[in-house]
Image 1: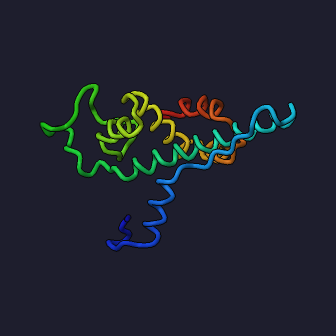
Image 2 (image 1 turned 180 degrees about the horizontal axis):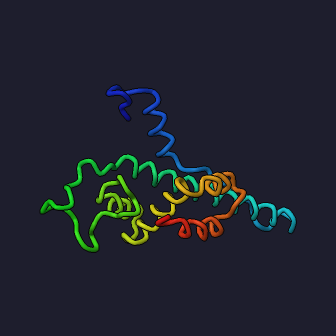
Length: 154
């Protein structure tokens, strides 16, 4: 059970339960709906995918916020990362160990994890309206993804 404020709580128990339970999957037998209903269902699926992409970005940012760089060794310290393993300048204030940790959590490569973290940061910092439209399902993920890299290093 999660501890909130140093105590076990009902909120912590509910949080654990909601994370552990599988998402309900509502699937229609494809042979039953009419052509128009299939098209409407495809639109609903696309909106849900967009909403999930926004939620994924929010979770990535939450993990990043939970990994501040306050405990990282200073750049001139022998234990500091250098070269291709140097802290990510595009994620200021975030631990140098965050991207490798995210890669492990997602089961992907470091580059993919870094790209996802950069895109999530771009949504929050530079494209809040895009992020809101993505979360609402009004903008599809491919279009939102095209905008994010244009704001990096801005």
